[in-house]
Image (tube, rainbow, N blue to C red; front, side, top):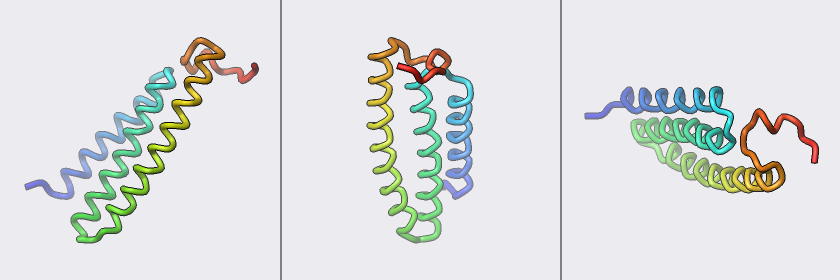
Length: 100
């Protein structure tokens, strides 16, 4: 039987992997994927607490959070494509200057 502790440990592991990816990688695409891991770890925690507290509030927050994350990914990928078209790179270190 899975308990709340199991879900929270999985959430902590996902959060740690996401934060490590954000801090270590220099590719914009991998940074976006790492941020999504962080958001999904928060969603997992919300869903787990909602389930174990017998409340729909956690599930409602998860649905709204997934909707916002989808919009964020769409905007982020559009920015990545625009940056790649102008600079021919997606490495963060090479994009330190924001001049055209």
